[in-house]
Length: 198
Image 1 (cartoon, one colour):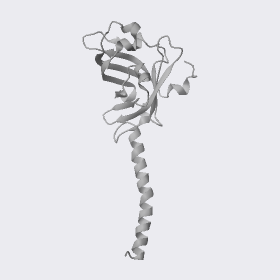
Image 2 (cartoon, rainbow, N blue to C red):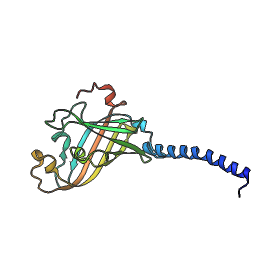
Image 3 (cartoon, rainbow, N blue to C red):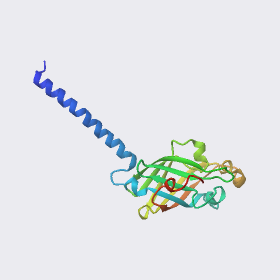
Image 4 (cartoon, rainbow, N blue to C red):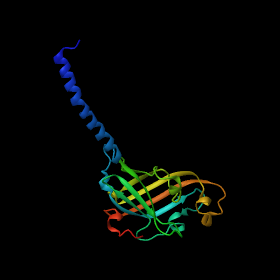
């Protein structure tokens, strides 16, 4: 049988350890959402980015310019808004002949090799398909966050189904690379300074 004093010490130690362990676990889980050990802080990426290139490149074929072919472009759209506080991101866009703008939302995290990983997996496939987006996009961070660049391999992409009016000649799904180039135009997310009317 355990001695009363040893039993009391064991109970006290156990009651002190439980909150400490919970705190450490919470910290580890939260830290993993925004950046790894040596990645840039999520706040370093906060701001509004507009697209210079939004293309689907297929070897042996001219690049399919999604930005020019199927998206309505302006000084506001399409754009990506990064919110450093909760490491969330919005991609705001407008498809030709659509009544208004649409948004796909996700989370992002930074990596030690100057990379930001954007996770759109919580969006339904139909929403991502409007932009040929995969669930995960890996961007290179250039010039301290002034530019973002991604060359994302995509397989079995049905461009004809995506935009029949533009790509009706493609009878088979194709493999290619989604080419994205963005420039930061403001250090605050556009949602903060636009009036909400696209």
